[in-house]
Image 1 (cartoon, rainbow, N blue to C red):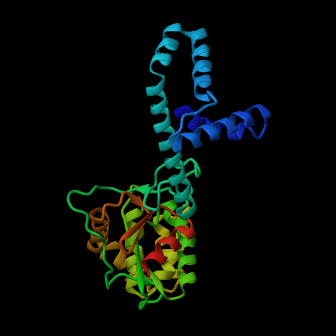
Image 2: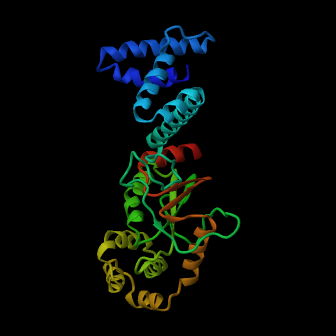
Image 3: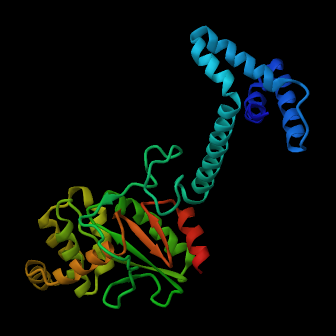
Length: 302
C-alpha cells in the first residue's frame, strides 16, 4: 500500500512515454484511492513491487534481499515519510523562490538549487558577531534619508561601499523607491568589512553629508567601486563641488569615526551576518534580492 502511493507520481511521469507505465499508474491510483477509503488494494501492485525489488536484490545480495523482504513494511513507511518530506521541502522552496527569489526565504543567503550562482543571495561577511539579545535598528535623525522624509515606511539598509553585493542591490533600491513614489524611503548605514578602504569610504561619505551632498557622493562611490583608491575620495569631492579644504580636513581627522563605529555596532547588535541586509518593519531581507521580494515584504508592512 505504502509504495503504491510513492509509485503513483513516478509511474504517472513515466506513463507519458510508455503505455506500460500508464497501466501501472492507473493501478497505483486505484490502490491509493482504495487505501484512503479504508479498503484493501485488489490489484496486488504492492506485492508485485515487493517481489520485483526483492528479486533484483537477490541477484546482488541474498542477505540484503532477505532483510528487505522481512522489513518491507517498515522500509516502505520510511520511504513514504522521506518522500512526503521531500515533496513538502520542494514545495516550500518553489514558493519562496517565486516570492523572494531564494529557496530559503528573504532573510537567507543560503544555497538555492534554483539560483545556483547565488545572484540573489550573495553577501559580504561582516567583522564581529553578536553577543546577547538582538536589537533591531532604528531610524536616526543625523543619517541621510533617500526619498521622501515623510514616507510611511523606512527601509534601513546595512551595506558597504566596497561590497559588490551592496552595489548590486543599488539598482533594486532605486526601483523600489521609484515604484512606491514617496510612500517608502531608505536610510543607509555603513558596515565595516575586510575589503580595502571599507572604513575610509564610509568616512568620506559622511564628510560629503556634512556639506549636504551625501546622495551624489554615495552614488559615485558605487559607480567607481572597482577602481577606487584613496586619492579618488578627494577627486570625487572636487567633481561634485565640495569645499576641498573642509572635506580633506574632515577625512584626515576621521571626524565621523564614532558615528561609523556606532552604525557598525548597530548592525552587529541587529544580528546581521553580511551585507547588504535590509530591515523593513519587523522583517529582514538578506542579499540583493529581486524587486518582487522587496514588494512582497513592503506590501505586508504598509
